[in-house]
Image (cartoon, rainbow over all chains, first blue to last red; front, side, top):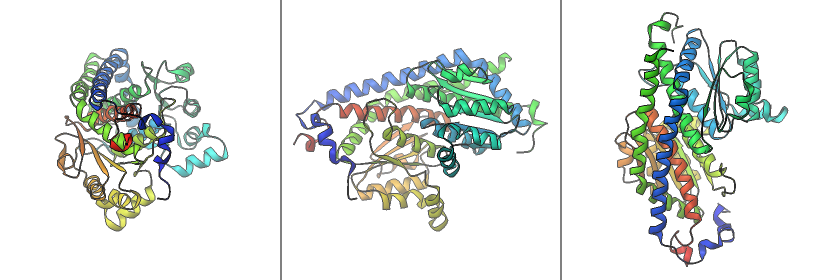
Length: 229
Length: 204
């Protein structure tokens, strides 16, 4: 290690080097902050359920129907939401014992494809081009954003709509451009302005969609038309 | 949509409430972990994160949280995930077995002032435990996010700070982990903003 990232801390944070503060006082305020945030996310999940509970059930029903007809799921998002996209794909594809593996891809996982598209054309197309290449009518496009304004997500949802895919969008704030598009079949907007709380509630939303999709596929309605996954 | 489906959605959401509230009861453990992390960052340490399966995505989420904060004006802090390099992971796994995957990277990428944070919903991932043991032996600060009864990882003497979500559902555990690491990030910065709380070196 020739250079340590903390070398410049003293110049960036001179106040850290000037006098003592009561550690117990800071710990007390930090503990209160944790309690406050735990209460916030519990209340936010309740708000999501009240607002979108019936639409979540309908979406899961539609996804189960799509899977039973041979759909694949394509998940995408940027930054923290890219990790959610990969979580969605992993959860559907490898759900563990007792659950049914379903075909799902994360469009964020192949660095060769993502960097090729970003370098040659632009970052706006990194998901849309993959959907254009691989998406078929009836497949599921599953995009996650906190702002609802990511341009590469908007482009991907437009492409998915053109191709007749089932589109599922998770957003926050007021839904942003994802809401303005008006074409996303199942759009869930987490009513919060905190990126962190939005992501936490979105995690519950996709976990609920997965569980309800599994339940719907396990029911008699779709079991007879399964393709044997 | 019929009412039975609606009730199911409600049930799925209801299952989340108690474990999420449980985090509030762990506020002291969270505060102490954040203080230890802030002290390490202040001394030049880096946060190294790892986990299997869906927890691999949490590892990457934690790293991006610290490196590229969502709140404008917060400083970027050094962090990286061990789950992003598929070539190394598959290479180590093929040659030495999967249990060695993260331990190998810790051994060759970490320095003693760093931090190792393992994410394991049931607390039994052997490669995560082995990496934490390796990290502890090297002098790193070791932290774990687990669930259930905490598993072998939470019980390990090699883990300095174990935060355990009391739930048996891996998806519910994950959701509380997401809130936990968002709070870890935020509170590390709170400590940075308070003068004099990051150890003797700071005020010397």
